[in-house]
Length: 170
Ligand SMILES: [Zn+2]
Image (cartoon, rainbow, N blue to C red; front, top):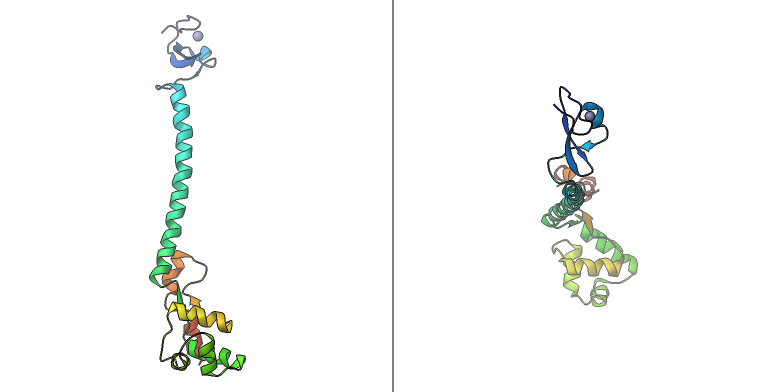
């Protein structure tokens, strides 16, 4: 085979790119050329950088998807749960303020009966009332269903909230 650069007759030539042209070169001349790619070089470069961008975007999308999945798990569990002894916590905090059930009820625009029922845990306050109580008394009535936000850990920690521990200690 004839080397297209030096014209030597050699046992084998290989296709190389020399200044944008494909030449069959001997092993000696091959080092002067760039490795030959079947497709247009500029296209290759474009494709490579595009591919890089794609992976970044894909990674971001994947990360966002993971976040959303985590949020879905939280949402499915209500994200946070009312603590098991919310009645006692409300009562204790209310007594600390020195207000009677009636006074406290008035202060947050609720009926005395509602407060009595909550303190007796015969009424489960809704989210709106929970945040009202939390704000008025400076307490936390909700516990995160899971800690750390690890999706894999959620399955294990489900049903084992801090509330469960409090309950067993009673
Ligand atoms: Zn040659």
